[in-house]
Amino acid sequence: MNHLLQMNKMKDTRFTLRFIVQKDGQLLREALQEWRISKRALTAIKFEGGLLTVNGVERNVRYILQLGDCVEVTFPPEEKSEGLTIEHGHLNIVYEDEAILVIDKPAHQNTIPSREHPTGSIANIVCGHFQQQGLASTAHIVTRLDRDTSGLLCIAKHAHIHHLTGLAQRNREISRQYEAIVHGHIEQDSQSIIAPIGRKITSIIEREVCEDGQYAHTDVTVLKRFVLASEPMTYVRLQLHTGRTHQIRVHMSYLGHPLVGDDLYGGSRDYIDRQALHCVSLQMAHPLTNQPLQLTSMLNQDMLTLLKESSI
View 1 (cartoon, rainbow, N blue to C red):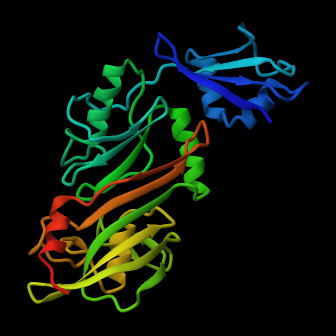
View 2 (cartoon, rainbow, N blue to C red; view 1 turned 180 degrees about the vertical axis):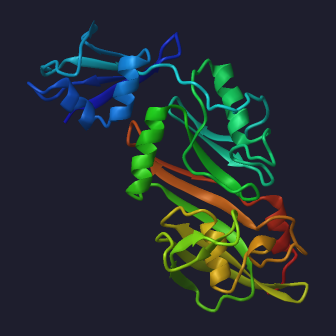
């Protein structure tokens, strides 16, 4: 099997991958497919300033490889997304290398700019972070979080890495766990919610469980049942098996236990000024090295306060 030898960031900021060939007589095109270089990336390499070399000599995709050849794939510099302003600010970085960036996102901050919040998003600040590193790249969001949801958020540092993490997501190889506080006492200690989610006809924002929606699967485990100010609540852990927009919020509302603070889906803001939802765990294989990554995040103080003020 061909394998990645190393990755490097060139002085001109072009992202380069280096492979050692372990299959004799193979076309370069076939090897690139095995290394999961997309057709889109190959087009960009050909027309936008990338380079394919074998043992330091530029070659095209019809070149026949020999065992032990060193192939370098140099991607063209990336343009940042149109309308994405470069900003500089604080990022709570949990993990970073030359391929991915994982941050602990605070509540009340957009992942990407919106019409209501065109600046100050994680994506804006990540672009500034990349600029400081000399990376000709834009913010490729792998695991997006709603504005008021806090916790772990993964960003790819190059389009090719985003392509690889996208493949992993489709194969359900990226695992995310959340913790939340919901209204009412959930009776079952654990259960699976498998209910399709689609856009609500009367809203451009809201989603709902509907027959013609997309398949959605959430596992729910009760961690604690308690009472706060005479109101029953449940502290739960949630495992996402799919990544639909507002999936946890919609599924918990559908179950009859909306998230505390989630006034869009039936929750009350009497106790907290946002949905009480936090991404506590992210597990994945590194997109290049295949080494396991397991990252965790503590609950935000506002959710911890609710739990401390509670009584069983």
